Length: 302
Ligand code: PSU
Ligand code: MN
Picture 1 (tube, rainbow, N blue to C red):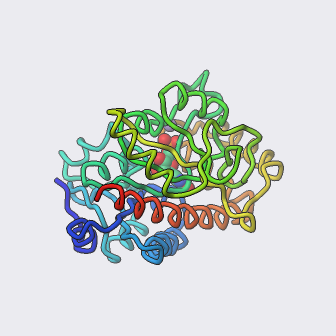
Picture 2: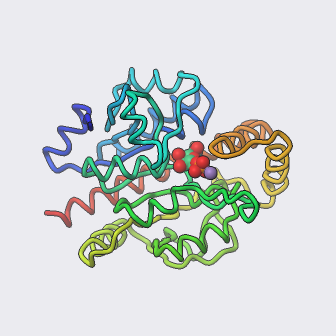
Picture 3: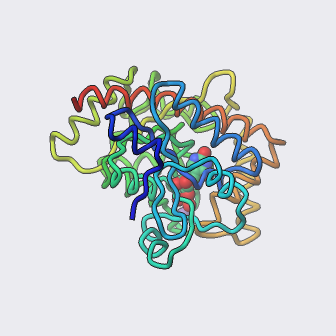
């Protein structure tokens, strides 16, 4: 069921640190060709910081952990690729299908392959208006069940962030701000919401992961890593743009799996590309931290 790329297989055999990367950000989170350029840059960033990248996707009914450059390029250019979450994973394998993995599905595949650390942009969460739509990302439940430490720049700021953090607290997921007291808000460093937990170095985060396992607790950790200062867009600048995009989504009747990709694309248009530049910068920043955590976790496992 699971195919490791030669690079990932070698790393696993040699007990080298490995960082999982998702593929929905490539197919549904960014336009071509920036999606492909970013996917390559993120992989390189992981390598430059001492770990091996494992981009995960389902290709022709096989879980691929680690993609060749040709596979990456094919995925980045493909149209109408399925967006796979926990519910869709086995069905895609059963039908021999191809699809991109969300945070939830990437966590499942990573854990099965023995990869404990995963870098992405921002997790899914509770959508605005969820009290009507009931739209809550499966990413939250996954963090409660699957023992992978996920490094993200918080939850995407298109969401209802206070409700997202409340749900994670209810589910018993450690939400750990990296190097600051408040939670970041994806494109912005500040959200005005105090983080439940804070850690300042990769070794402590790795110990936290390790000790959850030792305590027999299921689930992972969410590391909320603020976007670099020079790349951020202030929350006040984005607020009216997010409101506009959300209103446009409602007007066009966008629902379900389509909501997040629509909002990201609309905000890209409304910011004339600035949101994408920030998104790329924060993913690279998360890849760096994840590589450091993966290296510390390897030391603990020895
Ligand atoms: N991070 C980004 N861009 C993205 C995503 C994460 O910077 O597009 C993707 C992830 O795959 C995440 C998904 O799981 O968005 C959330 O989708 P939904 O809200 O439908 O659960
Ligand atoms: Mn949803």
